[in-house]
Image (cartoon, rainbow, N blue to C red; front, side, top):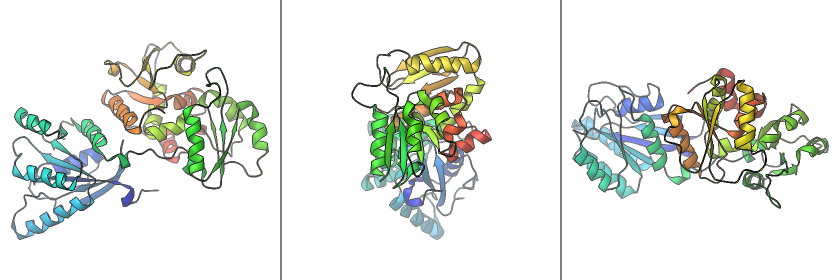
Length: 409
């Protein structure tokens, strides 16, 4: 189902005629959305393009006519362009180092007056020398900027990161954890193993958040240990809409859950809730490309003292090594920073990042892409390594389509 316009982040692209606005939009969307020509003024009316722009999600790009248009017809085009301000959530000013002047400053004034967040893109940086004085002046005003070249395909990922950093917080809010998958008046079964790593007297945060999300969506749940799942399911007069398990119990829970009941894990739910499930599914598919000796990074958001057979440092490395059939070089990192040699790794396996906000996790996914490294998470890795990946993706049609059709980046 496509998100309606009202649910999309409206990104207005503004600038002079022939500043490269349409080319930039086409490069970002990877489609020929706007007509591109060397003739100034090719874009006559605002062009709208709804799309999924990772990592922001559903957005509506609005490519506008140049505001330096001339003549009677130009005045009408300018009027239509100015009207776009009224529906812009995030502005993009496209210019180059040679042409920056009153037009661009007037755009900044318009955005500031309306309190609309915006970024500046110095396009065609392959054609113009960098203007350090101008960059310093904009930095002094705390204006966010990036340099791009559509021809050389540089700066586009940096622009995506800048859009993510600048988007209003309302548009970075997390999707539902599982309430939308279950539905009001329906039930889910949450399988919660109690072992050495389970905090005494309490549940871990993703489990608590999942229960609350179900309640917020007028659904209900049964919480059981993996040994009691089969008996619990037999007591339902109507099958539950979803079974959710801790990833470490995937094999047993899959065996005890009838195939007609959808099954996934808390970790996979959080790949969607905290980040980008589709991108992480692509990352899990990269496991098939791993070879003996390849470097893999296990990344955890917060530090903790491993107990027994820790999931990140012991179990995942063991299952992954068994799947690959050879020894891998597996490193671990904890905290907010990736190691500086990130590009040396073939795969990043991330925790659920339940203690972070979604913007930070999305930023990490962008950093991985910038380094050319596939990224996935614990639950997806476990399901893939244990051969139950398709079963675990059943509740997510778009992610399943990526897996079945081998859709890459």
